[in-house]
Image (cartoon, rainbow, N blue to C red):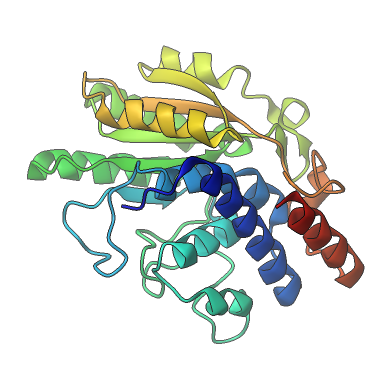
Length: 277
């Protein structure tokens, strides 16, 4: 577990965004929009004193588990793991390159700190709930966190997992929805609206909280409360975010879901993020 002081958390989240832009630009491929939108969420989880982990012992039995259900946002996971000490910072430059272990979607057989290989949208919450059920059977008090995209919640398997979790009283699982309102084809409300995700999870028997996904202190508080609450209901935090957060020309633009910036755009993005610091 790492607990970074308040103001420094915002600086760290900004550095993670810089690393995201650099790695995707170097790869000339990747998904910047949803990686940038979830940088503050990941910072709160890994560096706000929420998750229990040991980068020197990734298989620690008492560790909390994290599942990146929206596996295409691998750049934010890799950058987070690098700053947490699981992989070298300089390895981020190898994203999506031939022979690199930092593939376009995370591979648990290659990267320490990656619990499960993900990328097929809709499956991550099911995996997280399976992990949570297994922990219960083993008498292990650890928690499982899963980060989902809001567009991903259009997948039927998400709701099968939601039913399973509530039925089995998996109060050791926390689903975090990166609610940026956009998916690859446009606004979620235009593509296949999942309506009010908070109300929907409540209807499936989950405890639901809402948070500003770019307010790290708020995220730390909501995540910590959910982790501690073992009253019989699974937990969902609907985190309102901005796709492409931190880079002006990427913000709220669906076109930046899965496109690498060119050299000029990279320079502008890095200048904005550096000046933000």
